Amino acid sequence: MKTGLYLVVDASIERNELLKRVEKALKGGVDILQLWSNWGSYEEGKILAKELMKLSRNYGAPLIINNDYKLALDVGADGVHFDGYETLPSEIKRLRKDIIVGYTIGNSIERAVWAEQVGADYISFCACFPSSSVTECEIVPLSTVAEAKRRLKIPVFASGGISLKNIDQVLAKGIDGVAVISAILKADDPETAARSFKSKILEYRSAKAVSV
Image 1 (cartoon, rainbow, N blue to C red):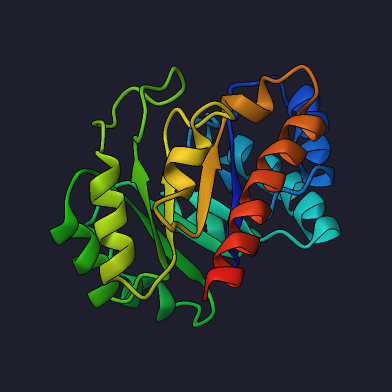
Image 2 (image 1 turned 30 degrees about the vertical axis):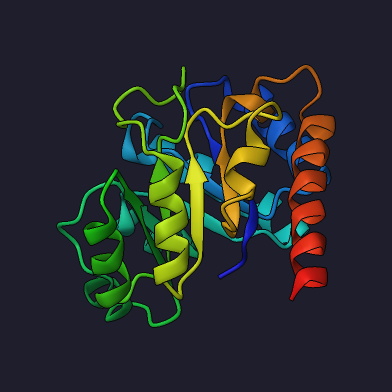
């Protein structure tokens, strides 16, 4: 599982404009793409997912589909990310062994531990800060994120309201990456925004490597 800068793709943005913005973000250093499950009909989701697959392959970034594992398997995406806990990784990996499976985690260390125990490849906490894009997530104290990072061996991501103004607070907890939506997709220049986020992540990685 790659770590670093994780871009959640908001399908509510007009498709041609969205694809331009996603490609600019990939040029700026996005490591992972996730197609958010607000794409409309299954066929609309399939068309968009295939277009994102082309971009993701060009830039070496895995494509993860939000919630719909059938769509992920149908288009050959690299993974599926669940907001709920009804489906276990074993159920998906039985259908395709190498598929990545991740979960959104609220303010629950127990749920984070559960995710690792059942075979998740990574988790993402939502939301670390108030967010205009994601309103259904509870606010997760950064102390919870830090505890999960201490206890888990799988990658831990943080999401929800993360901006260049507060990213240092979450990176300081030792996390493996940050997930962003509007701070990149709605930026005046998505490439510059992505490059700024990536620079922050690399800065913390470098500092961590020196301290080990």
